[in-house]
Length: 145
Image (cartoon, rainbow, N blue to C red; front, side, top):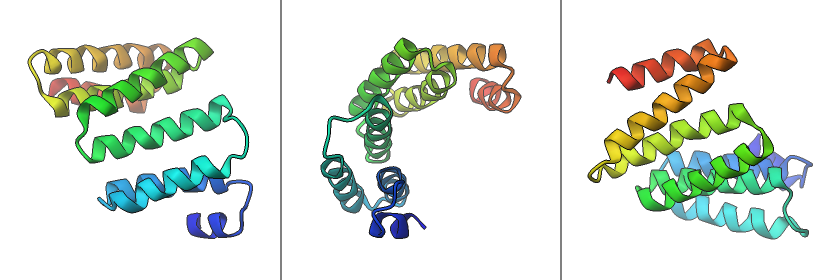
């Protein structure tokens, strides 16, 4: 379906490129993921909206995480957190905190595990305030492990 959307130049082709790039990242098909990111950027034809920019950043971060480029992933996640925080997007902010915590835990430099734990704790607090019980359970499991 994602490939069909891209071929048809469907309204969702940009999001489909981002989604397929994430799939490729998770399959360790990094070259193809990068190619889709380049295609996505060139398909815009105008300055990116905040939503388009966030989608591209999330895709880039996912690729960096999959390639174990922890510093790059953490920096991109922090940019996304700043973007979501400024816009008042609490759910997206909390969700990206999970990914930032994963990047810090993966990097595993001195202090990173404590910082990952604090990041997960912050996400837990936000999800608890929002009543997102499924995410609360996920964060509690992460914190307990």
